[in-house]
Length: 136
Image 1 (cartoon, helix red, strand yellow):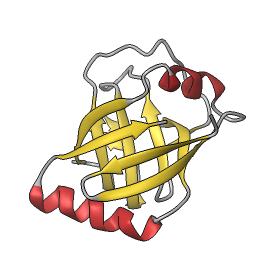
Image 2 (image 1 turned 180 degrees about the vertical axis):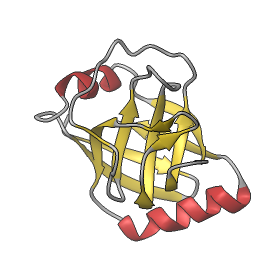
Image 3 (image 1 turned 90 degrees about the horizontal axis):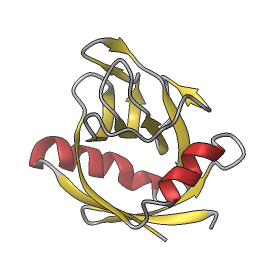
Image 4 (image 1 turned 60 degrees about the horizontal axis):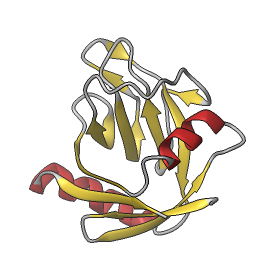
């Protein structure tokens, strides 16, 4: 499986797994599919939404990690100095937490409907948590 569908709020996206650059993160995330959760707006990172995962341990280290994802470059932060999380940027973003700048594993890239990412982000900011499903 090279792509998955993402349903978030009223929006739908197709995303590609970054298997060559983040093989362990992609493989681990595939074991969770279909993955259902809620996204909320970030506090420190700029124009992005996130799924806070507390102290959940994916058993992963860093691979293909970045602090400055482009819109649609989905990151998984494996934990460490801050809580584990999934980040879904929709605009300008510098991945950070209350302890400072972070880097997360870029493991998925949104391929279509990029114009809807800012709509989803603003909806999440002003209307609150939105349901999100990552499916095969």
